[in-house]
Length: 328
Image 1 (cartoon, rainbow, N blue to C red):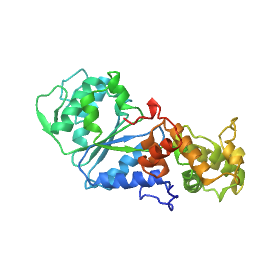
Image 2: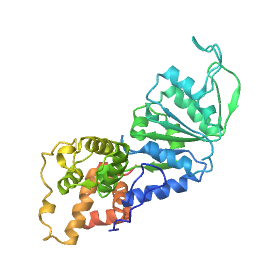
Image 3: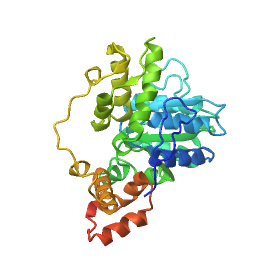
Image 4: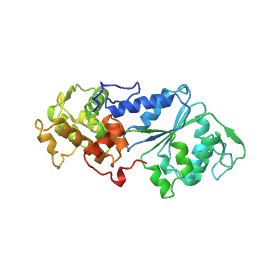
């Protein structure tokens, strides 16, 4: 299987990743940034989807234009419509003046729609029209407005599942999934945990004027053992708290706000040396498949191999694909 690549930090503050899955994401992101296509970013909460959107904007031909953000889950439907498309004077109670929406504010640049899955169906229709025709009307208005805006959307939910249950439009789903960037969870790229921890340590130590030079061996082991359900965001907050509480030159376990884990140690870790490379390979592939819900494609991306390699190994081991292993 492919080996880890050297450290690489994109020229966007906060994006750190040497794991093959992140290097692949960076490559796809830079390629997509040069296009005019709408981009969908998928990933769990806390994985850094907004930073990826910012990087797309800064590496695109629109970098001199505005980057406008909107969280679709933070506003009521009526307010969200006005925020997106603007409104005319008198369109509703309290609309005392005409107001430009985020689409007009983003003209010549990029509009980042976070938590797109929470957008009501009625507004999904208007968004689809814009993506197809690049035009819209303000709330309460009849004038058709055309703007030059690239849409980057993000979600932490399975849009295909939302289409199946009727809460997301299928035509919009297919319009969005032309370019899809998958941001891996932190648990799927454990080799990046030390890099990220050191990165956040430097930032937080500088911000707090503290002389802290690293982590004890026990602290490093604790960081690697913890599953980080909140992903990079949780790690960042943990390091920030540790920096504030630490009174020594090295952060130790008692400085870290993570609870010890009462879980069994993976038996393979107790057998090295003593197992073959073939056994290590099988263990790695099976554990990765388990972590990604059985998807050979996602497992291949994380491990830096082809999907065909995963499928070949499963056949070789006589492992029958389960229904949830089928990629959509």
